[in-house]
Image 1 (cartoon, helix red, strand yellow):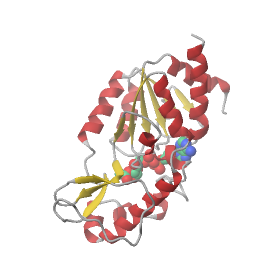
Image 2 (cartoon, protein in one colour; image 1 turned 135 degrees about the vertical axis):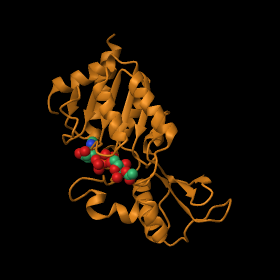
Image 3 (cartoon, rainbow, N blue to C red; image 1 turned 90 degrees about the vertical axis):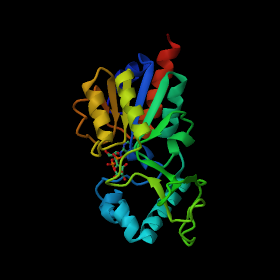
Image 4 (spheres, rainbow, N blue to C red; image 1 turned 180 degrees about the vertical axis):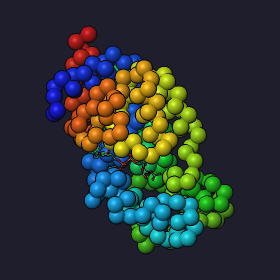
Length: 254
Ligand code: OAD
């Protein structure tokens, strides 16, 4: 741990809060064995081209290739499951109102037990019709790579993963909910995001500019690390359970 003082400062900020907004990214699920996007060597975008896999044009040109990649990611998520970081965030609901806005499409924060999760980039377990937009939620399971491409039960057209691709709008409800909560909450916990993708990164910038206490958990420094109130340079599965333990102790002492 960088210093007991840093963790105590963060735990005190949480203990003094009634409303918490969690802004999470791929680093939160990294310890479930799910690769992040931008880390050198291991990040998905170090190995794959987003233009070939995560745009409407890529899907139109080669749906087989796009589905193969998303099926592989579904399998990683199904195998990985939730980790101690997701569980610790869910446990924070014992102490305060917690709203989560995540860039992750894996659905793991809801699986961990959180009740209020806005999925800014959609959900990989949803199939959405490429023609009529009808959605169907798929069971969390390892993918069958040899299965035929999925088609819409309503209109028969090809379905696509229910995620936000480059060049697409974020779900308005999810984004507005997060924006409203930045203004309203006492504390913002930013976990496992490089803060490089907009508009999600703008939520962090709004938080830093506003009155809420901002805690960042990320082993690496990001563009906002110098501006947040507390930067905890640890992995989510180490820092978050430790924060919850400290918060439990502080609240039970009151
Ligand atoms: P990135 O891959 O850009 O950043 C992941 C961050 O997690 C980095 O800052 C790491 O230092 C940090 N990290 C790694 N391991 C961690 C751990 N164990 N605990 C805590 N932090 C850790 O991922 P995002 O910021 O989530 O969008 O990326 C945002 C969006 O970019 C994704 O939603 C995706 C991608 O392109 C779309 O596909 C539209």
